[in-house]
Image (tube, rainbow, N blue to C red):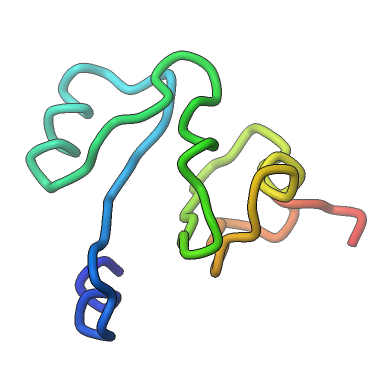
Length: 89
């Protein structure tokens, strides 16, 4: 996704990842691939989301859509299932 965004003319693409359960090995792999680990404790990574963000969330266990809606309106939200965002819609 980052490569596609760069090719489309985006000035800069920042790759950020957040999960309080990351192991040290997972962090190392992500960092070697250009990711910055954010919000290791709590939900600090959500503060990084703005109107130009693309959010990819796999296996979410939090009310992601509701949290993000209170902070910003990202360009795209990609999840693993529709029910992960709001199963009442």
